Length: 236
Image (cartoon, rainbow, N blue to C red; front, top):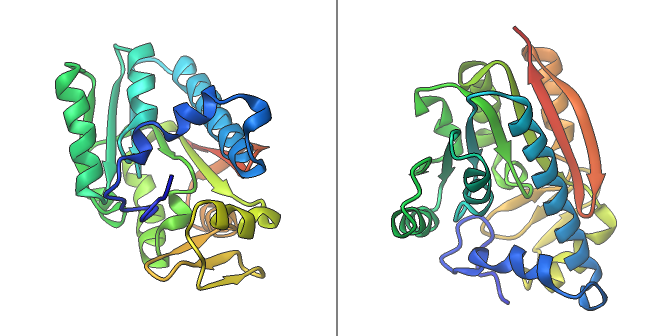
C-alpha cells in the first residue's frame, strides 16, 4: 500500500491500514509492520486507561486523520465526547461521512491547523497526538501547539504524545512506506521528506519546553515498537 503523503493524504489507506496490521498473521508481519502495530496497541491501551480513570471526559485528538482511534473509543464510551482535528480537509470529510452514516452522536471532526488549536475555544480532559503526529509538524506549529495547552488542557487533565524514536528503523521504515527521504539527520532526528519533515526525537523539544514554561509535567512513559508514548499531567 503506497502512502502518497503522510500528514495530508488524499488516499484512504488510514481507514483500514492499522486494523489490517492488527489482524495480520504475526509470522507474516515485517519488522516495520510489527513495530507500527506494537506502538499503535500501546497508544490505545494507555488511552483506554486514561478514559477509564476520568469521569465525564472530553477528549481531543490532534492529527486525527479519519478518526480511527476516537471512533473506537467513542463506541466503548458513549457518554464521553470526542473531537478530532486534522489539517487535511479530505481526512475530516472521510471522518464526517463515517459519523453521519453510522449516526455517531459523540464524535466531531474539525479541519484545523494544529498551530491554531488554542482557537478551539474549550478545555479537554484528555488531549492526544498519536503516531508521531506532533513530530510531523514544523517547529512553528509545534511551539504554537505547546503554548496552547495551558489554555485548552483542563486542570488535572492528561496529554498523551506518541513519538517515534527507534532511530535504527528510520531507513527501513521509509523504504517500506515508499517515502524516500531527501536526507536524514541522525544527530537531531530530523527526516526531510521534501514536502515536510518528521522529527524522530520530538521528546527532546516537548519535555524541556514544559519544564521551563508550564505546569504540565511528564507523569509516565512507555516504549513499544517504533517509539515511546509520553503521558503528561497538568497541575491544578
